[in-house]
Amino acid sequence: MIASTSRGADAIARVLQGASIDTVFTLCGGHISPILVAAKRAGLAIVDVRDEATTVFAADAQARLTGRPGVAAVTAGPGVANTITALKNAQMAQSPVVLLGGATATILKGRGSLQDIDQLALVRPHVKWASAVTRVADLGPTLAEALARSCDGVPGPVFVECPLDLLYPEAFVRETHLAGLDQPRSLGERVMRWWVRRHLDRVFAPGGDHITVQPPRHGRSTGVVALARRAATAIGRASRPVVLVGSQAVSAGARVGDLARALDRLAMPVFLSGMARGLLGPAHPLQFRHQRKAALREADLVVLAGTPADFRLDYGRHISRRATLVSVNLSPAELTKNRRPTIGAVAPAAEFLATLADAGLSRRAEWDTWIGRLRERETARDREIDGLADESVPPINPLRLCQGIERAAGANAVFVVDGGDFVATASYILRPRAPLSWLDPGVFGTLGVGAGFVLGVHRARPGAEIWAVYGDGALGFSLSEFDTLARHRVPVIAVVGNDGKWAQIARDQVPLLGDDVATGIGGAAYHRVIEALGGRGFLLDDATRLDATLAAAREAAREGVPVLVNALIGDTEFRKGSISL
Image 1: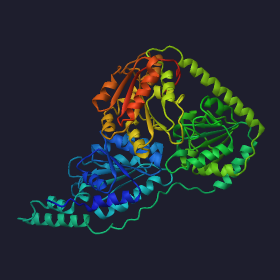
Image 2: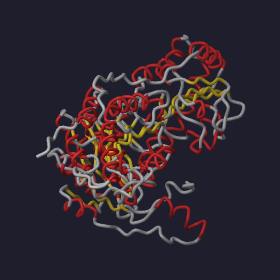
Image 3: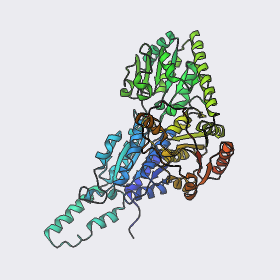
Image 4: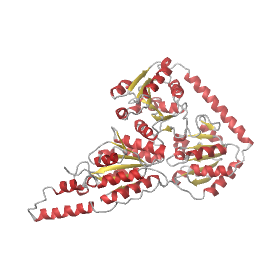
């Protein structure tokens, strides 16, 4: 029996421990088995899933909520390739994720070994930094560097390729590669034995035993005070200011408490987008949810905090050209994307806005009139939604369903959303209870994040009440992961709005092109599928049972099992005109 200790895998485990990483998300494979065994021995939780993309989605969600890098480990070749969509999602969402990828033995690279591809060429466009390790001594230092780089400046994913001969016990590797060469019978075999031994001596050379794990290097800025003073002067002249806070403002390492307090002190009307939803709680008097486009067009000063002027703002056209634009962003590229700001700061949003609040702005009388106008619109839109929700839309009005979820969710609820039309509808109604209690894919618009995000939330906040809101199209991407959720006893309450089609696509395609081809997916009995995978399923096809069914689902989840409510919904005109391009 060959000794089971592995210097390389143990080094990885020690570095993760030193960085306060408590979880590795994985789908097992022979190339990475030593990493998983060593990490488990070191006390880390090993959360195994059914699709490699889920490992990165889960690491992404955990990173967003904890401020520390999320870690995933996948096997070589197809394992790494299957993570690409999730890596790109993390890159565009600016989430610090460390992906450990297995690889063929260094001595076999490029020789047709199993699952041997050029992984760095595949991964590099989708990460901040990538490195292939070739010596055991370099595994720990490279991983420590990866953890730091994932958080430095603009956060994002990084990749470390870990060949299997660096991970398995040295005795086993030497025995495997020298098999048949112990008694060379020709000059060629002697040369081969010498070369293999020389290569292995280099692979296992001493070193790397003392590794310093640096704390995360979150983005720092220069010149914030001077820029904040300029912005304060501009705000002091404004009659109709608006602040729009985006996901980056609450990304890993962000001081969300400082950010919320700064917004409260600034006393300007605030719109929250993406993961910033919930930053001010469910009903702050300065927070507005509806008619954002109209507010931005009428504002004479707009502050973009951690969000670019991309498609979500019609490439900056939602903001009047006559308005003063103040933008703060960690990324210089995003700071000037489509609209060059009047005042721009490359800085964390919390730092800039706190400095701005310290400038001692005087609240102008015109602001009360402006906020009153926005509040009237907000109230009118809420009443309109209530009226639309009361309409009979069999089997169930999706607006009424979302209102039921809002009523049922507890004070410590975290919402994970994964879908198109139904999730977009839910965003008008669900009110995140606290900062970092709303997780959506981000700007990439990726479907399939749901189960992975749920896993990440469960590891980051084990006591939270997790609600996963799915469209039926999106659910199909991670349906098998309910087996994962059941095995790991994740008590999620999932609700799928099941209209049997890709509604967001059909909404455009049918009126514009006159054909619903490929937009129908049928109304599957998802509640039965979940039962087969080890969870609890509920069918909801009658609006009169809405509250009772959601209450029963919530109660079932308290038993430590994943629950899914298969809610059959009808069609509404609520989002008519929303183009998914």
